[in-house]
Structures are given as C-alpha cells and as structure tokens.
Length: 191
Image (cartoon, rainbow, N blue to C red):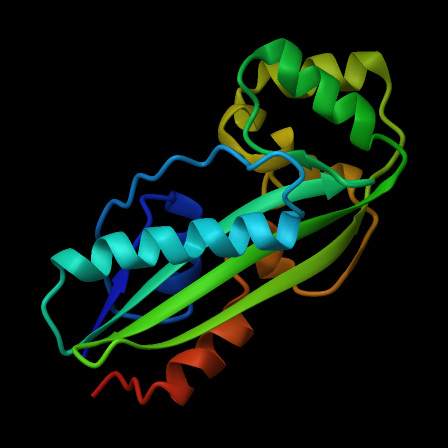
C-alpha cells in the first residue's frame, strides 16, 4: 500500500522521511482563504479534507492519502503565512512575549474504499519577548516568509521558544505520533 503526501511542504516531507516512512508527494493546491468567523480548528480540518480529497480523485489504490493544514492562532486570530515582510513583522510583534496555539488539521483517506481518519491537533507555544532589533534580524534571514505565524521552531526561531505544551512535530506541520496511529488504524504497513 502506497503512502501519498498531499502536500509540497518540505517540512512535512522531512518529518515523514526522518521517521522512516516511504511515500510519494502529490501537490494539492486549494484556496486557503478562511470563511469569516471560521474557528481555527474548523478551518484547518476543512483545508486538510479538501487537499486529501483533491489528491484522492487522482490517485490509484491501494494507497493512503495524507493531507494536513497548519495555522497559528492567538486570541481567536488566525496567523497564516505572511504576505509581506511587514506582515511577518506584525505577526512576530503580536506573538512576542505571549503564548499561542499551533493548530493542525489532518485527513487520511484509504483507497480504493475511501475509509478516512480526521483529527485536529493543538500545541501551545510560549514565545519569549522579542526586541524590535531581534525581529529585524530574524526577518533578514528569510526564514519567516513561508511559515504560518512567520516563524520556524526547527530553525532560528527555536532560540525564542523556551517552552511548548504538546507535540513538537505539530508545530513544524505534522503531528507525527497521531498520524502514525491513524495510519495503523487504516491498516497501513511498510511491507
């Protein structure tokens, strides 16, 4: 049974690769615009569902399609990927010195029978207080520009995060332990 990652995220692919999974990557571009008033958990689950369904229509079984979507949320506001350097600066200023949540929706679809597993994982991230100079230096690294919330815990931003509560891999973009359990529930094996 093949495993298909419905994402071109290098971070999700790296998590799976480093954990020893064999898989193929299939792009799954969907409109990620939130519906006004949509809670973060519903947004990421809706987007993960859409990505998995898009790839499942093009895939040939037996296979399991895996899709995910991740956002950063603070006090009900959703922080996706920054649209500009100013947007990234604003996000980092908002996160500085506060605790926020990283929320990931995951959808797995087994083919050809379309059996599925879905879940939402949330991890709390405690961010250190950042000075304007630290934010400017971090923005100059280009690291924040394609990351939800404008930071990468696995990169240079890790120095600004003294504590997390929950799954580290969820912050990177894929809650590995729960994904592994869902794959097992669907009967996936590497044999």
